[in-house]
Amino acid sequence: MPYDPHAPTSEERDKAYAGIWIGLGANLVMLAAFAFRLGPQLEGFAGLIVGLNLTIYALSGRFDEHFKSLANFGFLCLATVIGFWLSAQGLLTVVEGAYSIGEGIGATAAGATVPNDDFTIVLPAFMNSAYLLAALAGAAFHAGFLFQHLRGPQ
Amino acid sequence: MNNRLKVLRAERDWSQAELAGHLDVSRQAVNAIETGKHDPSLPLAFRIARLFSMPIEEIFDDGF
Image (tube, rainbow over all chains, first blue to last red):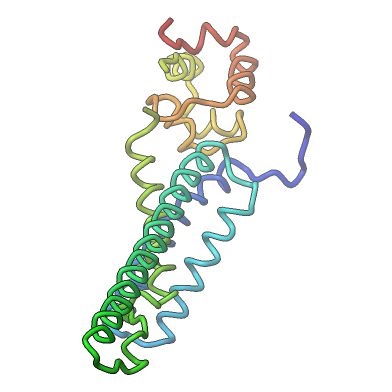
C-alpha cells in the first residue's frame, strides 16, 4: 500500500461514523421543518448539513471500506426512493392526463364544449416539492446506512 | 465469513482501536469484521494476514 502522508488516522476515520448521526438528526429536522412549516432558515440550515454530508460521502475517498460499503447501501436506498417518486409522479401524470382526455372525448361526443382548463394535469402539491424529495431521499440514505450497519452482510 | 481476528487480537493484548491503527481502518470496521458484519476486501485481508504473519486462509474461513 503506497504511503500517504495525509491519510486519515484511525481516530479521524472513527469520526466519520459520528457524522452519520449528525446527518440523521439534521435530516429529521428537515422533515419536521417541512411538515410543520418551521421556517425557511431552519429548512435551509438542516438542508445544508444533510447536503454537505451526502456530497462528502459520495465524493470523498477518505473513509475506510466498511464505511463505504454502508454508504453504498445508503445510496442504493436513496436512489430507490427517487426512482419510486419519479415513477409515482409519472404514473399519476399519465392517469390524470388519460382521465382528462377521456372526459374531453366523452363531453365532445355528447355535444358539450370542454374548457381548455379541463385538460390541465394537476398533481398533488407535495409532489412538486424538490425539498420534500431531497429530505425523503436523505432519510432513505441514513436509514439504509443504519440498517446495513445493524444487519451486516447476507 | 468466520474469522479468528478477535482471538489473534486478544493474543497480542490489543484493543480494537489499536488493531484499527495498525490496519489504517476505523475501530468500527475492526468490530464489524470481528462480528462477521463486514467481509474485508482482498487488500485489507492481505494487510491483516501480513500483520499477523499468517496465511489468509488461517485467519478467514469461508466455510468450504
